[in-house]
Amino acid sequence: MSSASLGRSRPTKLPPQLGQLRLTLEAPATARSGRPVPLVFSVRNAGKTSVTLQLLGRTPTADFVVEDSAGRRIWSLLRGQTMLGALRLHPLGPGQRLEWRHRWDQRTDGGEPVPPGQYLVRGVLLTDTPGGLSSPPFRLLITR
Image (cartoon, rainbow, N blue to C red; front, side):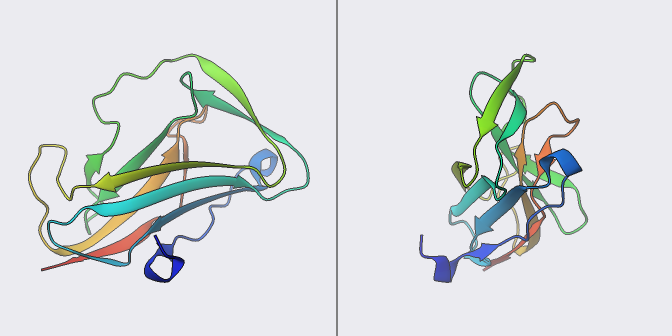
């Protein structure tokens, strides 16, 4: 994906101990109805010291979440999946990043196609924090 065709969410403000992390979601600002939407969620250590993340699962896991313009969750990549409850320590050195990619098929969790309109998309890193660490919402416009 070229950076010219993608938009990027603004980094999330985090608790002080994780304040050097930058969580961003990249996606096209607009997408035609029915076409897959490429999503890239990244967590980068922008600080000068290492950060140890407490992550759920055997490998670092992230979710992608889509909400409609009223703020209702209509799709989640991990909805219905069982995640291991054990925490795993994952060091992230200065300048290092974790990245996840997915192509959303513009369908709800129930398998129905979504209508054209405005949507909010977030990436969520699954951690010991309730609800995980979320990127800021990214606005996606689906057109006919």
